[in-house]
Image (cartoon, rainbow, N blue to C red):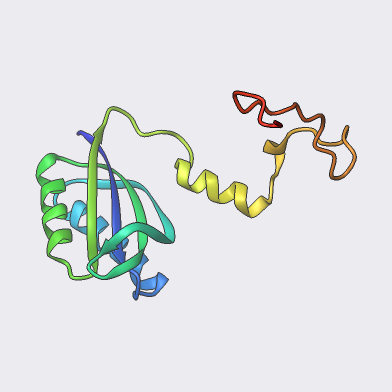
Length: 143
């Protein structure tokens, strides 16, 4: 069967339990039509780039499925009819990536407080920015 990845955005005024209930509901829709959800992730409430249906935030969910095309079409149809679901994106993939999604990896790094990307700053005293070069403004303006 083909492999798919789905991202769903639900309304912000739902509780976390209700948003995860939507994931379970649509997983059963796939199962009833001959498919299965291999893995799912609840990404939490995130701010969107623009308003959708007067909402600035939404509950994001990510599903990896192994289902026939008819099952995916039925799930998408029901998602678009559901009042709590604002957007759906489905992509057909050749293989599912192992481990957590990139979004969950970012969350893990934030929770750990890892600041390894700042480089070695131990060789400079506090507040020292190093040598500054003289600026050139295209001509001598000190006349």
